Image (cartoon, rainbow, N blue to C red; front, side, top):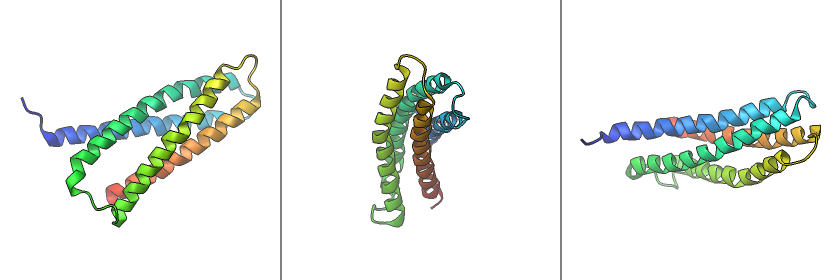
Length: 152
């Protein structure tokens, strides 16, 4: 039984969007928790951040695989990199690469906070808020570029 290639391409796009929603929504959730008044259960914020880091890296892997699948599906029909659309695609891909590279220090910082002995200070929550604020901003930029590409 042969699969309909159009159906496969649609499924890949949906999985890509679901992984982006998971990664972006998780970052927004951690940011919202860390933005509460300082001193409210910093250990709980770190615990949620640790769970998010696992989700983030899983979603990043899915996004990379499905992104490559999307490029392969549309490869011949894509605009040249020198075109406006192609330049935006290159900007999006560069932003994604930057987000992934800059997420490693965030993950390491959260891991370090999770292993700190004693009570977590409000400074830890402020640090998490800053890290996830940057992550959320990067995701918002990538999402805006993706929307522009889809409708441009």
